[in-house]
Amino acid sequence: MTNETFIQTGRRVITREADALALLSDALGDSFSEAVEVLLKARGRVIVSGMGKSGHIARKIAATFASTGTPAQFVHPAEASHGDLGMVAKGDVALVLSNSGETPELADIIAYTRRFSIPMIGVASRSNSTLLRESDVALLLPPAEEACDTGIVPTTSTTMTLALGDALAIALMEHRQFTPEHFREFHPGGKLGARLSKVRDLMHGAVEVPTVRTGTPMSDALLTMSQKTFGVVGVTNSDGKLIGIVTDGDLRRHMKGLLDLTADQVMTESPLTIAPTALAEEAVALMNDRKITCLFVVEPDGDGSAQGILHIHDCLRAGVA
Image (cartoon, rainbow, N blue to C red):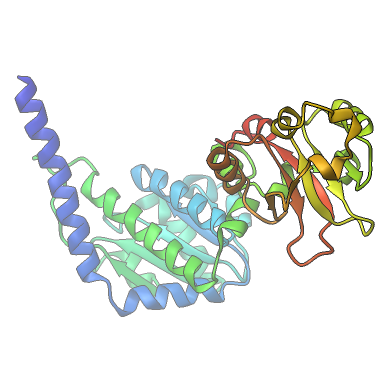
């Protein structure tokens, strides 16, 4: 086979799966809305189950549900028959996947949901299959050929099932008004968690904030700058409100007679600040745009005092870039 043949095969596969997804989109109807309603009413978890390739898709769907505000758990149908049915309880909803709808290993979990009146949503490609006949809500996959010419490898069918699971998860997420802040609670680690970190999660607290009062001699202000190691010092008024900042640039501009001046004579007024609830990614963008290395953290509706300070290095260490 030539490289061109490989490319043609790849394009054929992707085209078939894309066409199948278009069919799936067109096929969505009342049963999809019913499935969402059943999932919303669940007092417990969504139990997602499937065998073989459908099982791999089921694991991903369960993970997507769990990370977007819908408690979910994958239960292996073969293990369910050997004790894991105890993971399924009243108040749960079962989402069971099978392309044929006749997978033997699903028999016990289907029977269990029927016996204990646990709502079951079935996903399959055959309307008269056992799974869909027994389901409270039947989600029928539209007829679409598998990506392989032999039609025996689960490809197009698993792609449609995965997309259907994503569609359910996003519908639930949007109904619950799930925000990036909620999302971060379930993703504290990794690059995604870092991007969704808040300034308050990374900032240095009030004890570490380098500040001096107006009227403070620059000799003392320089000492504070050196001790706190942020390379800046904030200037506050008698009420503790941050009114200015002294940076390296300010020092260079007032080099002549610097030690004869006070901090408020050297400072840059109305320094740039950021709210503790802002995303750390926003802080990094602000620092990059203004070509500065740190920001004082001030509550917008507070008394104007510095609640903390955030350095670009704090963000970089946390993976925010």
